[in-house]
Image (cartoon, rainbow, N blue to C red):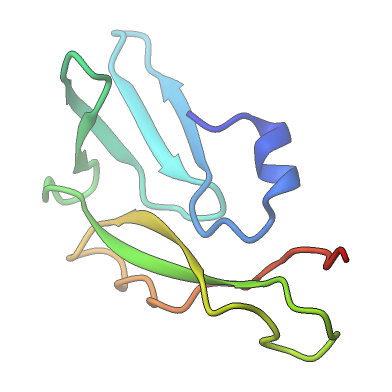
Length: 112
C-alpha cells in the first residue's frame, strides 16, 4: 500500500490505492479518483493480493504504463537518457477502459 506522502512526492503515478473494510471484515480497494471498487479475494504469503470487480465479479487484471524519465541537461520536453519507469495499473476489463501505456513523464532535476 502506498502512503499519502509517497503519492505527493510521485505525482506521476497512474495508480494510488485506497483501502476500506465493511462491517463483516471484507476488504476493498479502489484506485484513487476512480469509482469502480475492487473486492480483495485472497492474499498469498508474499502479500500479493487477488481482486474481483465488486460490480460485475470479473477478475481484475493490470496494464503496464511506461513513464519516461526526463533527466536531461536542457529544459526541452523529452530531454533524457531514454529510460522509463514502469507501473502496473489494475482495471476491470468489463467496467473500465484499459489504461493507456503512455504515462506522465517523471521530471528529474539535472545536476552537473
